[in-house]
Length: 387
Image 1 (cartoon, rainbow, N blue to C red):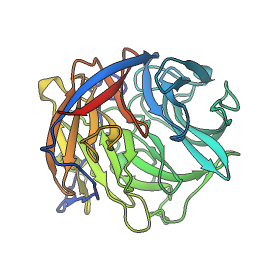
Image 2: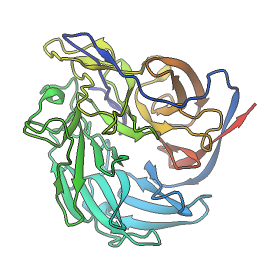
Image 3: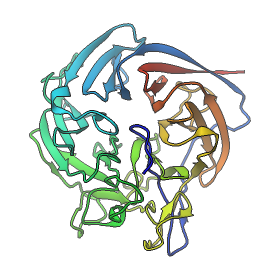
Image 4: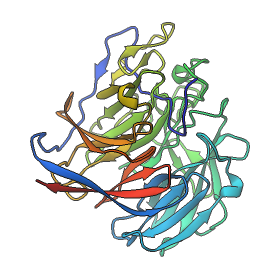
């Protein structure tokens, strides 16, 4: 079993037993030959940063999540910080466990914060709490009401992504439960929420409902939106509703999958990303067969010290001038950040953005800035200029 920190080991995979299906995301991308210059600027630090989220673009602040169980509110320049939530006493921290993700949504003019964390029993717990107008949390030492608890059989592959889609529903990335090689073949097992992307409508009072449009209404778990993921550590939606998933691989391949929206729903509805029949586009467990799996848009091997993909952000003309529509991601072991450009079905451009960043935990974006989070605690801005 290979693993180095909270991102090592997980991949999207693509078909087994049938011809893989290639996704065709709608993009507004700037040409690969547009010349830009990248640099990075450190703006602050926090222990074990794993996520960075803004509530709304008009706020003068954003939030940085510490895996140890705290959330800080930062001014846009990073100079002013205050802790708005401390749930460390409710959280199991270490390895791939901890406070792993944060998302905000507005329902009936009330702001809600949704947390993805490992509870004291070692299981994934999704909770919800309210947020005040000034951005503080209504209960600064409580994770809030329990929405969903998912038992974890092992200590790794907890996933961690939680995000609000363009439909205002909550999407959750669940790893395959851990160990290695999907030993229980759980990623294709519809009786388990592990190895899946979930779509739910949580209640501020606790619990949730299954939204209209979920594709597997007759299955034991109609919460399932997509299946066949290994460890979707970070995901993001682009302005077109395409769901971009950076799924951590097993032994050889890391992958990016782009799941385009249709006219009614955001991306990913009913998609099978292939694990563990495939690691990336490469056959893996021969006893797993899949119908119409999705081929990753991009994959890379473990050469040059690479080991674990850590996405996920899509550029725009403000965050990354000249690179609107490009997808940005890091690698935990290589300490680098890269960007890829797609023409809708294949990758037509790949370039290195930054290197020597230590262990990259995530690449995240607000409406006007893109950031790199490193395990040593450093939060950096990516600065892009046209050459």
